Image 1 (tube, one colour):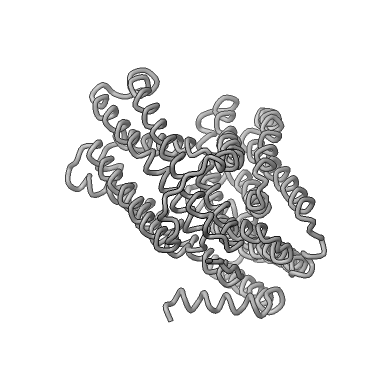
Image 2 (spheres, one colour; image 1 turned 90 degrees about the vertical axis):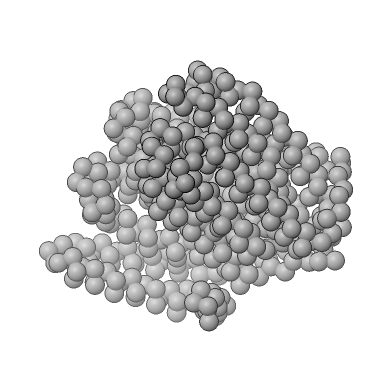
Length: 507
């Protein structure tokens, strides 16, 4: 029987791989989208973007089973019970396939309504739009089944393989339209290329999953597992359904209560600062199967250790970045987008940056609660927060515009973080002393000193040249890094960091 060992070095390595898995496609998208827009034209690119959005929305037919696959396979591996894996995997895949086909039929069925009535599509593009949506519909089962096979690899802590597939797959999703533009292909042909990428991705994931866990090749569907998978996945679906509402509600309220121009002044800093989420999400993707495996074997000591250290790592990495945004928001926006954005968006950016730090920390107890089998708690918190957030956002946006929107959003994520941390401590019976023992108190103290010193230097160095100011702040943050290295990180942490550096430079 195979038992997956979980340790800090493996988590750090997986986190780095997940970061690359998100950052590389993001960079490719940033570089290629301008050429795709120019080649397709605004209207066809809008249709392509809509196809991506619809495909993402229809993955709600996943019903949380991709996450459930990772959770329960990780538990089985943690217990050394690989015989349970085939039943878990094939039960999830069978359900995914069936509901994926349902999603296909639903999208094909509503395509005439979407194209003919709901979407404002130019008459000359109606045929392309219909063909595009039909192709997108055929991709739904492929994406859902692929999520289960990817979940198998994540449960086995093989994030090297997951990202070896994810990076080229998502990258090709951007490169396929670029190739289509270069060869003068119509939009349906470009979407067909993307569909080919999805087919190849699924095939590769199947082969890798069967190699990593050979017993999963044995087809075994168990009706007794349906309630277990659906109960867990159902609560995940609730979170996935409410989450986007909590995420995008502010934009609709701003458009309704202020103006469309205000939406732009709010959306740009919001989209920019929330890109920082790829850092904590890279960590929590690795933590989810680790938490699941440790909870399955009842290893509360390491569960507590990984939890505390993850909070510390998130603070060490994101704290200085958020601090710089708090102090230099206006300068950054003026350099990037001009004086208008600097005037209108600098305060919202500062408030949102603080909210991103809080929400990044909240991702850790969120992942823990789902990892130990309590997704109902995270879903119930989202349902509780929705009416509260709607009332606060409406009130603050009415009085303060986009600054009120940023404040309401930050208050909502702060409430979410408080609830999640309290629930994690209560259910897992963690002690507050673990934070001090794992260097979190020292980390907060050093960040406070850095904030005080940086604010003081900014006040004093305002008359100096940009070059001189840059040198001063580089020296200050270098000192912070050295203090954290010497006093916050222990020998184990430093060993992991050095190992990751050697992996990074290929030595």
